[in-house]
Length: 411
Ligand code: SF4
Image: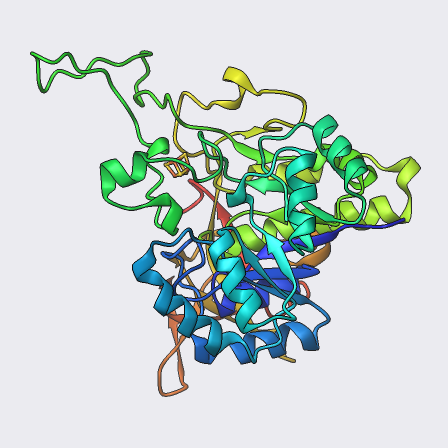
């Protein structure tokens, strides 16, 4: 069976290592400019060789996103950026703007080109056009149904196609939206979207400034533009059978807990399908794991037709049952583990440790030792973000395991 590549976001070096550890076949990353998601931390030119070495030494491909739409004044900076990255062995560049594509062709003629979802490919004629331009892979627009995906792949068999399986959805054609530009001065097509579609909205009558009428009454306000997040886990078999070359997870701006949790679910689901397609079923623990992440309710998006109002979440911007509190840095032979604290941890907390392959263990904190900058450790009841602590969970733990806590379990 031709199993699609699992393609994960790598917003910075830490997220890249997490993506590799939790089973990505390929990652996509951006420079500080020209890749949408300018506000995620991204990579300096100097950091890229180490990132590529890390990926390739683990058998993982790395794609560079250069998918902004650019104005004339940005072209000289783009040329410099492309010349600087030309020697790096990226497995492909992800582009959207035909002008950027032409510049890559001139500066790095051998570079494989993948077409970004920003180019909004929704039919096979477009796919055929891009094939004639030498594009190797197209990330299909999220606004396509499964039937449309199948039809497009059947018409352009020489092209590789990629489909999003998980992550945020726009209320416009992916990123083609002026709300952020108008309301926050941050242009979505330059990678700077402030996500104002997720904000709470009320109705104001022109002559009554300050009087905000809820459109739908609810104590949280009204989230009329708030799309649910995409989750196609239950439909992996249909996507694999469609012949897509890659399944893409959205979220370069999301944290490492998101990258780890989503990947470990989709990795196991895909591996189980490859091993035994006729017996595959969507395990409840996979859906439970995805429900623990901060999300806005899940939808299958356009996979089975226009989502209409079931694709909207009207009641809250985010749903979050668990919070990420730390990352295991080192597992010592004596059973103690060093944890980098990201959110306050206190004695009495019930912590869950998670790792690849849906590995998990629970443990109640009965005290901890905080590491000092001098390398000593002191007993403590509480640890704060950016501290490093020693704990001794009664089960095996590995570096890159994540530590989380159900919300509301802090004593
Ligand atoms: S404001 Fe919302 S719909 Fe518009 S580009 Fe940003 S995420 Fe997409």
